[in-house]
Image (cartoon, rainbow, N blue to C red; front, side, top):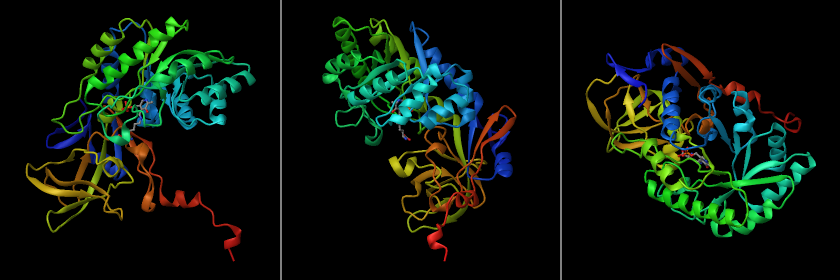
Length: 420
Ligand code: LLP
């Protein structure tokens, strides 16, 4: 459920008409609903309430906007980071260092040092050499790093190839069969406290069966490591729950996911950690755009909107579907292609889509754009960096400014050797 609804013929974000935001901030613009974010955070936590010990770390990559993180920090969420930039955001938004988990296959030594300095709660080690490096740096600093080993369970999550992470050919984690000796070698290092395991098999997952299979494999490894004398007190189950980009395709609910987790992990006796991203932020945001032209096409008209692939990359990158709706629907429908102004044929949001009839000047939204939306934006074609707005009841605020070409140009330099 979200708070972007048609009321009296026009779409609102909570109690704010989207037309008001378009008028005051311009388009394209991302709009987030605080109430929706909070609702999703609470539904997710509630779904896990039957589990004895849990820790939830929002996958900051999904939406690193400071205001969004602040909402989630107030809900008691920690952060799952993959860079020091994300750590800085998490801390700036009020997340506690101890609640931060550092994932990612390419953490650099300076990043590891900075994370240790900040006192983050956990390192998710992706390869043995990384564990050795963390131990070394921690020893130099007179510290002990708390860590888990990320395993690759070799399970096909059944999602888009570019967002699958748990198959043996993927770059993530150590092969699960090789985990016991690697874990043992890392556990023997001073400076490193190996406390458990982590996994994450992919994103936008609709079928819980592969997740369950992967969790079961990890459960068996927990028992094996314990039998070998290691103390295992936590398992990080990653993120990955899908969201309904198309209204008639309904993903498993957090509650059903929670039941599955309870069933599979009942004998584990560990703190279970979660890294949800999309399921929290996806439907809490829309991309508001204005139709520039409706261009007659040979087969279908092209609705050319002022948002483009640089603002919302998912359709161009993953052929992803985002529902497109008029802010003031008139009841008529049309079949059209939807494209942005960028000079690439790939700058297309939809082909042959059945949509509300729109005309030049009309406002429209791409739904489910709160996760992997603004954060993946670029300034390609020297377009401004898309701004973000958060709505709270009848109030709204700009939470990320539109970064204009002038500011981007000011950050570049023509060197002296080109000045003559
Ligand atoms: N934990 C780890 C280790 C991850 O790699 C990810 C996502 C998550 C948690 C959060 O997954 P979520 O709950 O959001 O599914 N840009 C792509 C998605 C890339 C996801 C990468 N990892 C997209 O727009 O679909």
